[in-house]
Image 1 (tube, helix red, strand yellow):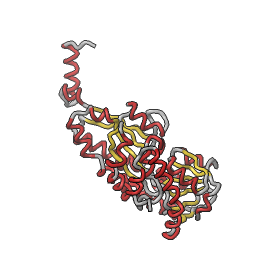
Image 2 (cartoon, rainbow, N blue to C red):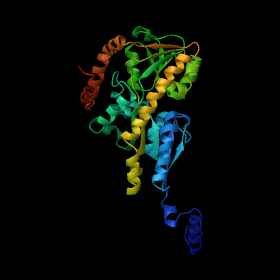
Image 3 (cartoon, rainbow, N blue to C red):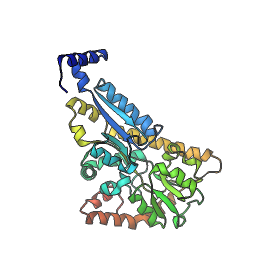
Image 4 (cartoon, rainbow, N blue to C red):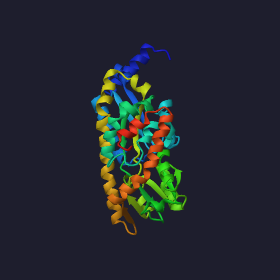
Length: 338
């Protein structure tokens, strides 16, 4: 379109009506943030929404983040990271475990016994990021990377009290790494996004779900699961908020600085704190719910389960080394190799 004096003046008047100069109106940048979680999800509501407001305030609305929960931009949850790479969205909130093969080093952080809390696990992720994990994110600017609380086993009909109880059960898993743990104990692992768990448990498609207690509240799982096995050394999912690297690099320096100053470990620890708190809230909700049973793994059982996982941990470290990855270095840094 050819810009005439008339169209220029019209644009200037429109910008003036909003309180912006013509240059500022043209310079405003909007980023699209896409995720599978519903708008009530604790990270979406309590961490990411305040962050978008902070970014807008610090930039005086020169940079805004428009939020699209519940897959509103289309596609399926496992496609989110690739949507970011392709530019369908600028930023995504997702799980690397949904496409584990794309994040082989991150998958090793899901091994049993990596941390005692989401806070502990998140600090370890960032401590190991530059040396071991950054290679998995060549196309991204990582804004948040944090751990969930430890996975629980939520079952509708059969309680899981011992390792032997896993045998023959069909259990939902969030990732290939955690599937291997279930299969190691004799269960059949069924990969499934969290959004499908409720109906799958309710209809008997799966016997149980491997998922943190924090999710029990966000996705109303207490309505359909009866037994909750907690405090076991099971996988701990890493969660990710990432921005397309090219999009980030194209921002002017002042906006890059705002992104840098408001993200990273600081924002990640807010996500971890939200999960750790909600995990406790989920456990209390189970205790108060009618006809629900909380099964708490003892310290002695924890040690026995972790010992039973040792061959799997060694196997995954060896597989990573054969693939040319510094797998033993990362697994060793977590203290999982004898």
